[in-house]
View (cartoon, rainbow, N blue to C red):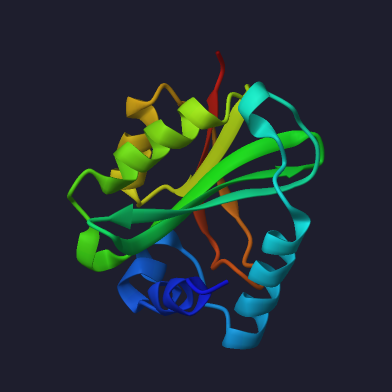
Length: 156
């Protein structure tokens, strides 16, 4: 829970939100979500198990937290998501983090969704074998703006 304030600060970055098509959460909503995630315990995705919950990891570079990555298990499906602090974009950190998470979490198929305009994230996912399966306009939610999204899928 010690890293949660820093992760919240990353989420407040306007340029990062514009790239991802997201809206930052206030501290109360953000910390409550992370308290729930951390209170659930591990989801056991290393052996391909499915279920519900989140498998969270922080991304550390040179001893410093620079982002977070997770696998979310819900409604019988699993998806990967990540957030890198903007000051660390363009250094291959997201690609390395995704590769490590895919080694740890062997659930397949695995989904990912990215804003269609987030070409860097789409490249990271495609580099790791994800294939676009759907492109659609998605409605605004409490967490996202209306935008075009790409859903990708990783098989074996």
